Length: 467
Ligand code: GLN
Image 1 (tube, rainbow, N blue to C red):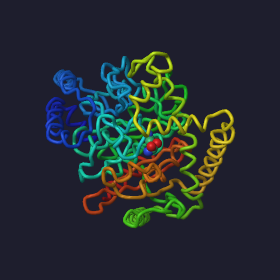
Image 2 (cartoon, protein in one colour):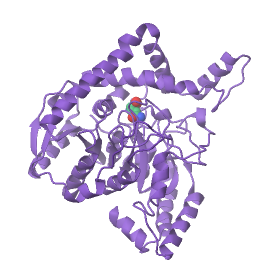
Image 3 (cartoon, rainbow, N blue to C red):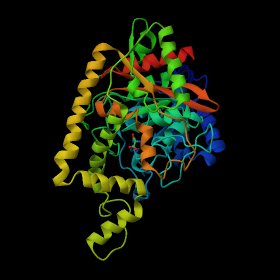
Image 4 (cartoon, protein in one colour):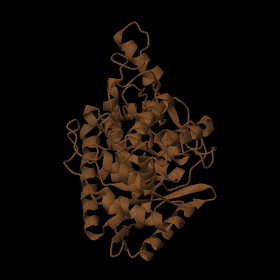
C-alpha cells in the first residue's frame, strides 16, 4: 500500500484514474455482493479531482493520499446516511464527521461509500442488515462474516483500498478472516470513538481492514491519538510505520494455549499449527501458556454487552430521530416504532439486556460480569509478563453457508469464541490471512500487550512477507 500511495502522490497514477478502476470493480461486483448501503460515486469523483489538482500543483501530501475507503455504516460521515444497517435509521443523515473520518480525509483519503453491516453491528455473519445480506466474494453462497461484512468484502473484492470498521467482540477480525484480508482491532483507548454509534461502549473500537499490513499501519498512523471529544482516548501515538521496517521476530516469545483451541475445527487447527512452525522458523520462541477455557470466557462477553447495548438502544424511541410509527399514545408510538423498525437479533438483545439490568439482578449479572472481567484482565497481564504475543485461530470454523446459523443464536455466537478476549481485556489483535481450504480463507489471530499495537501490526507484516 505504501508503494501505491507513492505512485499516487507522484502523479504516476492520478487519484481520479485510480478511483475509476475501483468504480469499475464496484460496477462489476457490487450487484451480487451487496457490500454497500450507500455509494457516493459522484462525491468521490469530485474529491479525486481535487486531489488531482494537488498533484498538478506539486503539493500532494498525506499518508493516505488518493486511497479509496469504504466506511462501515455505523461511523458518521457528514452529509451521508448513517443507517447502522437498520430500518430505524434508514433515512438518517449524519450532520458531522466521526473523528476517524476527519483524520483519514485530512490525510488525503477518498470515501466512496458506506458499507453494509449486521444491524447495529449485532452479528457475526453479515446477514442481519435491513439492506440485505452481504456475500463472500470467494464463494457467494457463503457468508463474509460480520458485523463489518461490507467493509471486509469491499476490500476483498477490490471495491475499496482500505475500509474502516468497528469491533466490539470480533467484528473487524471475523470478516477479515472469512474474506482473507488483514483486520486490526486497536487497544481500547488508542482511537477515538467519536462518531461511532455505540453497540457496547466499554468494548467498541474503530479499526482498519486492508489487503496488506501496510494499509493497516498507514491507517492506524492516521487515526490514532487523543481527541477532546472522546475522553477514553489516551495521549499516545505509536510508531506504526517505523515498526514495520524495524521489527524482528528474533528472540520474541509467542504464547498459545490449548484451552483456546477447544472446539476449533480440524482444518483451521491444521493451519494454526503451520503458523506456529512458521513463527519458530522466523526466530520466535513458541511456548504454551496456561489460560482459562474459552467456554468460560465468551459468555462473559454477552453478560457485559447485552446490558450496555440495551441501554444504548433506549435513544431509538421513535420520538427524537429515526423511524416513527403512528399511535394513539406515547407508549404506542414508542412500542410500534421499535417493533416495526428493529430486527429480531436486535430485539433479542434489548430484551436480554433489559432483563440482565433489572434492579433485582443487577448485582448478580452485570456487576459480577465486570468483576470477572477484571479477573480476566489480571490473567492476561500475567500471561504478557511471560510472553510478548498471544496467538490463536481467529474464528473456530470456516465461512458457512447463508442461512446455516442464523436461526440458532448460540451457534452464531460461537463465531466470537476467540475474538471477544481482546475486547474484554482491551488488548490489540489482528487477523492475518494465512491459509486456504479450497477457495475458503483461513485466518490466524495475533494479540499483543496494551498499546503495543505497532508491534502486532509489524509482526503481521513479517508473516505476510513469508507467505
Ligand atoms: N459478533 C459479535 C456480536 O454479535 C461482535 C459484534 C461486534 O464486534 N460488533 O456481538
